[in-house]
Image 1: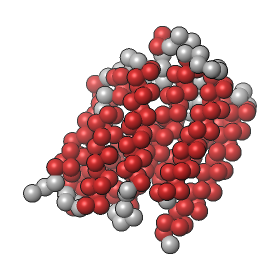
Image 2: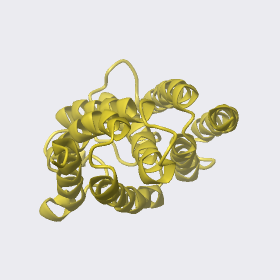
Image 3: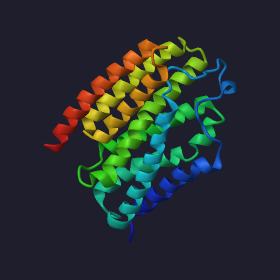
Image 4: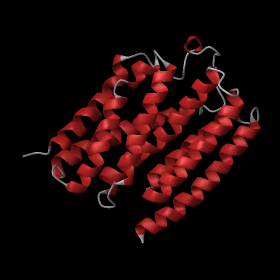
Length: 236
């Protein structure tokens, strides 16, 4: 009998992937969603970076199909499937919620990121390209995206400081989480995806907000070192 978790993983992967076709496009919170409109906040990556969703969607589908076909009752896969199912189920309505509420979508994306990270931390070294890699890329992007959402929402409500301060705090906090996860998981896809997001923040800010770019550049240096060293340990 096929493991129900393998079926649910494919089901919620598909609902997650097709959900953008049933809601309006989302490219950041609209001006009317926040008391203080956030137009191109400094914590937001350049638009091209969001193209990574094509890779994430496609790789997750391939992984779910392969898992149902070749690893339907594999215990190591099941450890990953349980938190991944929760993350994908939460992610299915995320775009619709993000278009309606900055606050609720920020809370939701942290729940998505947390469960995705939980999946990465238990992902087996075996089947790395079929399971560990796609899940780690997904979790890496959600790690960055959750703090982008937090920084935009908090600045939009004028909590403690403005957009620039939340950009600093968001990058530092995201980096702290990312370093912890990278050291624990040793999954290179996770670290490389966080680096992708940080580079896109540099491209978005350039010299206009050079301090944000400098901080993101320092984050890239840290994540590069941590990714290389942790990946080396996980292979040896």
